[in-house]
Length: 593
Ligand code: GTP
Ligand code: SPV
Ligand code: MN
Image (tube, rainbow, N blue to C red; front, side):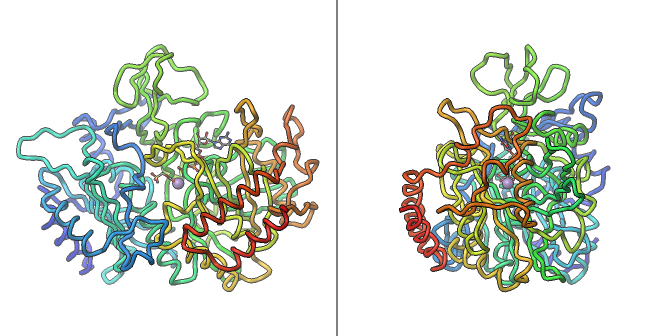
């Protein structure tokens, strides 16, 4: 047990407010995990999958209204609206706290409050952060065991005097005496709050049990709260994967990549190259903390310990390493269940059997209109199970990044790859990112393109305008000769018939090859209004069959003049951006004309 007074006092205060029937300090052991799973299987909250087909694995089905992050219900309760910026929902901290106290009072009646101490970042790293999540969801406890270093090891890291990020979570569904529980308790949308308080760096989440709404170490702590700390301390908390690419010469290049939710981070992080002599190792698939290393380079650490990955579209063809990772000891949420007790989803790589139980628990047959798995169905699994996890993935000092990829889902307009001319121009490319909205957040605008600078629109804890300045300022703390290069990529350009022009997945190594050659000064590029484009001949398409490189690399003057106008409007919407970026936008327009 801990003697940490801040922790003990806080837990006691929260217990008094939430009034759970019991309080349990989680130790993070396998026995504790197994017991919680047994309990949830017995209550009907979980299905134990067939141990012959999916050993140690479980299926959960959420409430049909609680299937993804809720951006409209996510708040940054900064002292002023300006601090939070036009990119965030702002709430007055005093008013929001009062509203939440009302909701939290008695909210855990009939339930157990679990205390989950956890570490984000490798154990013993000076850069790691300790959080403590209080939750009434046993589903959250078992997920946090995969996603973070939790339990006794975290309490040890915290010590008796250490500081932590307080993370309060409730599904918001108290039970009256004798009232029977449901499989997935949660609160109605208008009672959901994913609240962040910059003043004391605390998180209060109410009403949802799903993903980033509830696993508070992830988007709430490691991005929104961490971005606030990073701004103060000159580092960067980013929505990025981290990978190492070994080329046929045996050189290793460390690359990070910012793509919005459900736009290919997990897939790129575990890519199995289709070009001979290349190999990828995974450091992280969703979040990167970037700091100055002792050698003056930009060092990346993955604060997470597991993957919360999109299931649909994941197959032995598209992402064999992910498929092998989830063969055992995996939590599946909102996928379909086969009669044999295994999982199925759209794009798993084999036809659906004659009968399934869909993600809502209903009978499903091939030909049914609705998908069997929810488009935002996910797997939760420990990173250590990944067959291509990097031997360096828990290095306390992180890995040195040479290239940063930026990208999104753009069916038109955006070329396969374009390089930033220099660091500032790379930040410009990050600032103009756009992507189709995906099922990773609840939205009635899925498929529409929106601006999403650095894939951080839903995750930056303060104003994006100040955030872009913070990126420009990184030039001051990274050594000039070690600044990373930026590359904007788009795997999702489509032809007139709506088909993807680029094969994607393992073939994305063909773009990474060009990136590595650029980093090492081994290939020429051609300047364009948007940045440095490859010569078509320099992207290796051997063995691909027909690929329309000309269209993939095309830059249409008309489309980009429209794009520039939309970027200008977006910059204004952000309340203005650093003058350097505004000038780069004007420069791009001038070059287009
Ligand atoms: P979050 O976990 O939400 O942050 O998502 P992510 O960025 O990790 O996305 P992920 O790799 O899980 O991919 C999301 C979806 O995009 C899956 O259905 C993939 O199959 C699909 N996808 C990933 N990479 C490619 C690609 O190169 N080409 C195409 N066409 N689809 C891809
Ligand atoms: C994302 O939406 O970017 C995710 C899933 O990685 S969640 O954890 O729900 O945020
Ligand atoms: Mn993500």
